[in-house]
Image (cartoon, rainbow over all chains, first blue to last red; front, side, top):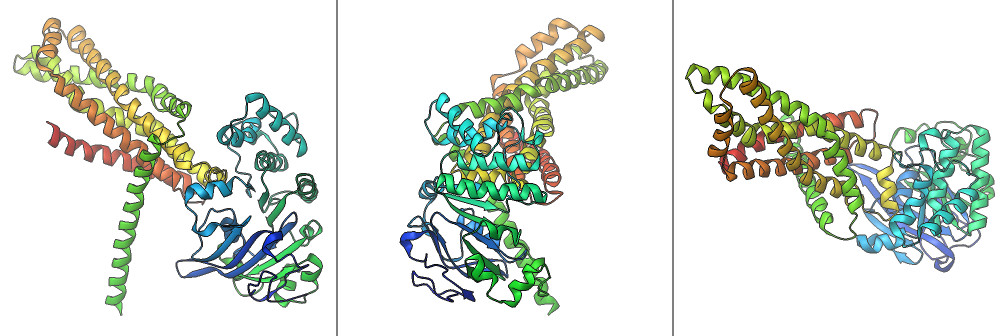
Length: 279
Length: 258
């Protein structure tokens, strides 16, 4: 495993590997340089570097409090960093104004941890929402697109139900359909299997893999579901104490013999309080 | 050291207060700006007028009827001591139009629609639905707050007008029909002594209360903390702060306008 420097030239931290050489800006959907974020006196991201290769699934794992969710909130432009750079599809988004940020946001789809479906709307209305609000498509086109997307996530016949009437797994599928309906280039997933039983977890993982292939998407996923998630990932980043400690293919990361990662993988507390802080 | 810590704590308290006040005011400015900026979504505003206005209608009718009836009863008993029962209509109408109508209508709407507003936005905040709007490149303030602000500005004066009319009718039913005050002087007193200024300033008050209630309730809900008690705390704070601000603003506006 290569360490400490990615192919586009930025220095990594800890034992970063650039994996199979997907480091150049041309083949990366997202590039993160030295990202720093603190809340009060607590440093949550401490100079994170990350390359997210196009058309692959990159999974960020790590203990609670390590900074993975905060990193994802920077990637989906919900938070602004204190310093550092985030380049999405060739655009440095860290200095953009709201109008320009919204143009970048239209390339993104996001599946939130609890789905974040609008509970006052039916499944159909939820999935149609981005199209109604952000496009000029005709009603018939919207209906066709919504039904096609719901079918692609294996969710037919529930269009008129409200989110509260669906099971956890169905809610995730509906939320995934809403994230996909406007045909984004990049899909971000925040712990997509939280609260699901092992059977549904496997089904959602399979769906993510199929969706990535069928739609030709770049996927960034935050997950604590190790090692199960390694089966669908092309790249894994292990974030710990606000630093990207390991990065590479699942095989490279699991064979890196990093003591902290091995303890995390074995489900043991790191003993350093990382799991006590905010994510 | 103890003194230094006290000074630091006091300084942080002052800075936090200024920060919170700044955010509170900026929130209203944002909502007001996006209320007039495109894209325009009238259906969102109409939906909120239904929720804030139409669904509060029967509550307002009920409260205003009883308020007018109490005013008619108390006013008749008090005025009879001076042999001035003929002034009952003027007393009831001016009390309602200038003061009780705008204030009680605003308090009732804050309790019913304001609390629902804070709870709904709070729930959306805690379940990341507001973040979902942002990620979809939809401005959550423009989508959620501005329509409510406009709906408040439209609904409050309308409901206050209803409150005034029903209240005056309630006063008539008790004072004139039940207690026997002279009906002709009840109505002619209103026509003679109530001016356009009384009506306009009363409605102006209700318009300001419409802004205050929607502003406070949306702000509290929008900024609800993502914890178990986040929504309930936001709702309680929204109703309490709205009520206090209604009464405080009422005093200052009364002092300035009358």
